[in-house]
Image (cartoon, chains in turn yellow, purple):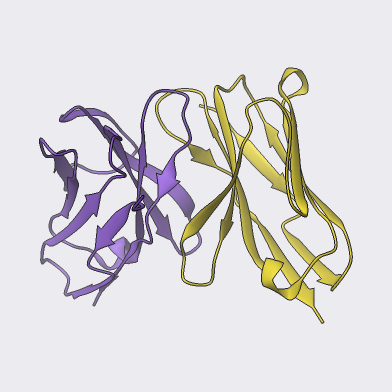
Length: 107
Length: 112
């Protein structure tokens, strides 16, 4: 099955800094989503981005399907951005999740 | 528009008992997925239901089962509970193939 790897596993930032999270996947996908898991466990949709570039406020994402990677950019980090960010890919019937990047933003 | 809802939010059971978790998808969504997030194991696909039928299951034993009702809501049943079944169980729904999956708030199951 498809393998999804995220890096870095942990990221510590000062408020206001920018960051880039990476997701590599091992096969062609028809769905790629980025999520932010809040402290209560809910997965909040950030982007549905099997290819191309999208932006939403301070967040943007780019997926280069031919090279099998996706990047999530967070600009001007805020403490509320802290949490775990997951990349998930679907090549068949279900989403396969990476292990996540744990982001800690301090003031 | 209401999102995906799950009940109960928390569930405490003892080893050997059965647990039933419920999920209501977003209106108009016909597919429901179940995922397990256990400590140290990450998010793993459990079951997929579409149009009332089980379409696929992940690498879990048969004591994990479920069903989808005519109104597209779904139930996950876990029989003969084991301590390692303690986890956050997440339900997701989507409208069609290749569409975004939207997740509910989850049910935290604790097996003592």
